[in-house]
Image (tube, rainbow, N blue to C red; front, top):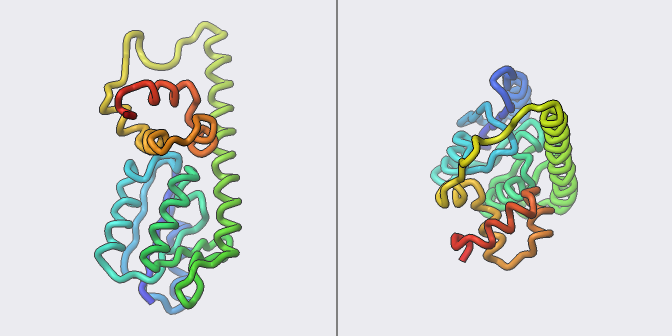
Length: 208
């Protein structure tokens, strides 16, 4: 059984040693062959394209026969519900099972079919992770509001405007959903990108 270990922490002040250690111990106990380990220090709110090691992991799986990917818990994979479910779908298509150590869940059954119980539970967990991300944003915005009220200034310098290419790169998923004709409200529920930003994306020619 060939497996890959993936670990992630959000900041440089944190470390993923325990994640890797626990996953190595589990792999040894199950007599798995750990053929590769990927680890990175980056926010789980970042998109897959912005996460070098996760992107490399997916490329590695395409080029090699891998049976399972081991992660410590769901949010290590992503806090963005769209990316989280997309990665799982990609692994399912390649018949690679995702094992989540904290929950003892696997996305595929022994016969290679999708585990319906895991799909249900992981969908719920992904929603909670997304909600937690929203709460973090809300707390940050509250802090910004207080800072502004005290006379402070936050944000970009006056006159700064993102280029079309920057918008394309940063909001690739939102643009894809807009092109599918999904409503702004539903896209907000999926991505947590503000409706005002979504309107700007819709009105720009890059959506056409």
